[in-house]
Structures are given as C-alpha cells and as structure tokens.
Picture 1: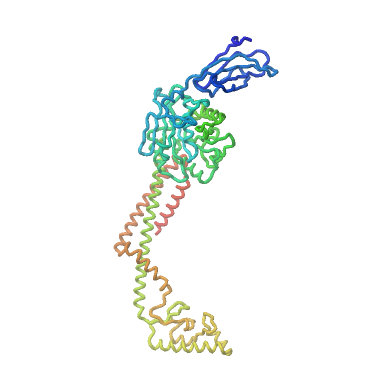
Picture 2 (picture 1 turned 45 degrees about the horizontal axis):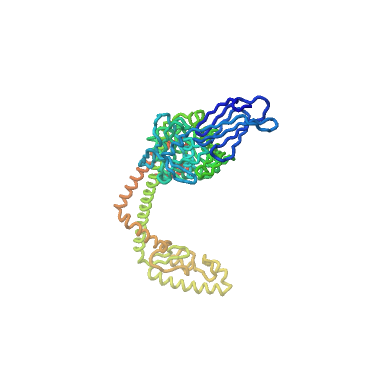
Length: 570
C-alpha cells in the first residue's frame, strides 16, 4: 500500500501531538506507534493502541518529532502504514525562560521573578507574577498544614503545571524563595493568567507558615491582616503527608488549623503529599480527628523529586492528572462559591481576643493571689508578734511544765511550792528504786506507774495533788521553767523571722494593708470584667466557628472559672 494514500490529520501543542488516520480494513491486532526526537539518537518510543487515533504527550516544545505508524497482523508481523514529521509549538514556559533567572545547573532550575513584591508590616509578602492583560476570573487557593508537610514544594509543582512545563523539558521552574521569604511569613503568590497557560483564570496561592501543636497568635494576626486584602478564597486546602499517623500533637495541629475558619466554610480539601500510590494513612487520621473533609475530593501528589532532576515519569503524569482534576471546571475547585471570609474574619478576631483575655485573666489571678498571700503573711506576723508579747508578759513567772502531757501543770509557783516540788521529786526517786528491787511493792507500782511505762518511773498521786499538778506523769517529766509550756515555741522561731523578712518591705503598717486590700478589690473587679469578655467571645465562637472547642482553650477557661469562684469565696 502506498504510504501517501493513507489520509491522516495532525494537531500539536507545545508538548502534545495528536494524530488521527483512516482505520485499516481487514484483520489486524493493533496499531504500533513509534516516535522520537528526530535530531536525537534516542531509540524509538513504542505505544500499542487499537484505535486509529493517538495523543502523544510529555514532549519537548519546539522540537521536530519523527513518527511512524505500523499495523500488526494476526501473525504478529509489522508493516509500515505511514510516517510523518511534526514539530511541537513554542510553550509559554520557553518564553518565560527569557525573563527567569537560573539558580541551578544540575538539574537546570529557573526562578520566575515577580514583577512586584509587597511586604506588609504584619509579616505578609505578596508576590505578583506577570501583568494582568486579560483581566480574567480569579481563584484563590489557601494552603494550610504542619511544618514539613510539603506546602512550598507543592507551590512549585503548581507553577510548573500552570506554565505548561513538560516532562521532556530539561528545566523546571521555581517561585518559592527561602532567602527573601521569612519562615514565619505568609506568602501570597498572585499568578496572572497568560495565553498558553493551562488554567483559564488568575490564580492566587496563599502559603501559610507551618502550624504547631501550640497556639501561635502571630499566625492568627497575619491571617486577619491578609483577609483585608484577599477578600475571598475558592478552596481551603489542608496539606497532609500520606504517612501521617494521628498522634496527640497532630490532633492539636489539626485543631489549630480548623480553629481559624468560620462556618461559612463547610469543609477543607485534603491535599496528600509524599504519596507513593499505596495506602494513605492520612485520610484515616483526618477522619479520626473529625476534620470536616470530603474523602472523594482528595488529591494525591508526590513532589519529592520534582526539583532533583531524577523524577519518575509515572509520578509526573499522575501529578499532571491530579492538578488537571483540581483546576478543571467540573471539579470542586470551581464549584465552590467564592467565600467572602466575613464570618471567618470574625472568628479570627474572637479567637485572638479570647486568647488575649485568657492571658490577662491568668496574669490578673497571679496578682490577686500574690496580694492575698502578703495579706495572710501580714496577719500571721501580727499574731506572732502578739503571741511574743503575751509570752514576754508571762516570761517572769516560774511554771512547772510537763513535757509528757505537753502542758503547764503549775503556773506562777511560790517559793514554798518550789521547795515542796524538790521534796516530791526526791521521794519519787526513792519510791521508783524500791519498786524496782522489792517484789512486794510490785502491785502498788502498777497503780502508780507513769504513762510512759518505764519500770523505774512512778508517781505519787497524793503528793502531786498537793503541788497542784493534775496529770498522771512522774515528776521526772516535769521541768521548772520561766513561762508557760508552748508546743510551737522553738519550731516557729525561723518562721517568725521569715515572715518578718518577707513582709517588712511589702506591708510595713496597717495603712499599707488597707491600701493593698483596695488594690486587691480593684483587681477582682477587673477580673470579673475579663471573665465577662471571655464569655462573650466564647459565645461568638460557639455560634460562628467551624470548630468550636479547642481543648487547650477549654481547659484554660475551666481553670480560670474555678479560680474566680474560689477567689470570690475568700
């Protein structure tokens, strides 16, 4: 068959060639398509198809390709049907190379330079790429995730897709800049649509710094400032590594991310990174953490080799297909109504004010408890001083104190009583000695045995009653001392010194005490107002937020309310 008699049509873009020809009559197995870069010495790539149409993709732009179509008969023999040569067109990516700056030679990486960079004082950087010549529709993609989840690499993957970079091209684009962009900055990439782009609208990509398990007010403040310039978002995306297992830390991170949204956003779109095509533990983790997302709208990426020059072609094709589904008009990205972010902005304000009020309440409670402590110490110091005065008054009186019963048996002894006390002590010593050596007095010794139960310790009840002692202890345990017995007399000396040292400068007199009580009452009134503010912001969050309860905030609120109740009681 003459090759020129087979009618066929060709169509091409910068990285694809489409060929359609008249089908072969008769019996045959398949068509075999072989193609290669005509100027290269590479072997032919081979594709087997059953239909008389093929689209060859992932080609290099502005390159002449040699294409041969074979027919395979039932015996497996091949016969050439026709051949042709087609040159791909110039891509928008090749045009952008003229203004891009090379940052790496192996692999070849170019950085697209923004035409305008705006650094807002709140820690927000807005990078605008290309001029808005077509004034087309706009879509905004909000990327949220933990540190190391792959958000920045995903941004570079999106720009390579949008600018129509092919797998066969020997270069890649990059728009993220770790040097000029701070790690804590929110970066908004405004990519204006151009002829030849793979998306038909202006695209804004907002890369938010990585969330941590703890509350970070700076991110809330930056997002609040950002939403003043970016009035709406098309899709809120949660970037999660495929291997993510739900730990307590990840649960807190998810909670902190969801806490920024109002109920004007029904769900977030999961973007799964580091995906190798196997099981995704990330979806199970999101489900266990009660993250509102739609599992069938999950988009899977593997961008780990994008800028390393060794990427697997299968991963590249899969990513192109995923991004096509994400930005296609029939998918969720274009079906979501543009969210005006008014309720989300209100939730952000309430979250910020709530956490500020919680911090103020904790500080206020510390001030109140400090003053309560000083007032208690001042009262204790006064009572100790009064106790010392009372003891000094009694210090001149001679007393008989029992250290077994721990009391004063005879107060202010006269000279006669003291002399008689010596006589009774002497007689009890003799009686105890007799009880020890004489068995006939054992029964009597049991009656007069001292409570300490020592064999040589006895007391004579009638003689001690004459002294005025009412206890049942031997005079062996009695001591003649100045002043009454005091259990804490020696133990509290150091405490008295400490109290005097601590309160001497803080509350030197009663006037200072009254002033401190007034300050305490003022602080209590302020704390009550702060508590009302906490309740007001919490009520706003409960009615407008996508995620109502943040465990950390809830626990702090509960503790503050308990503290306030205890302070009001005292």
